[in-house]
Length: 247
Image (cartoon, one colour):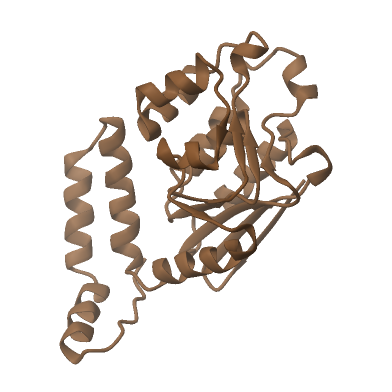
């Protein structure tokens, strides 16, 4: 179901079940969480999440939805783990995204979509009340009115609509998606990991209204005391590209 690789500080997780539009089984969600946990102590600089085939992800597998027992919330747990991953995350949306796949994409820091893609969350069309933690993620990332359109109206969005509501950071032609992802990965790789990861955490806490000021101050102090801060100042003075090494 998933392919995962980590090389030179760049992690890739690819949903690889194109015959069912990369729908997520319980096992697949568990496997992705296991990869994230394994990489949590690594020197990863950036994580890319993408899919194969015509769609990025069609949501949770219908076989798993049908059993009706979601008390352990595997999708919510996966999305929380992805959102809280310490390194920046990029969702490369190779095609349409539906149901729980939309929340999976929203859990990433950045989203790059392709022309012609569509998005639809059919919760009210199948008589389902979406999990409150998931709805909160939509409100946090897109705002309450966009969340109403997604859930209460079960509105279908084309790529222009997705851009309008702020779902996508970048919209590209499908054949240029790999190059745009590479550019964004390079951009992140050229920044100081300690500062990037610290500010990612601060932004997340601020957006949730859970900022721990003491922890944020500690992250600030750690950056000022780091070799990367000294390297950044030296590179600026010497008019060269910095070489960052602190994590």
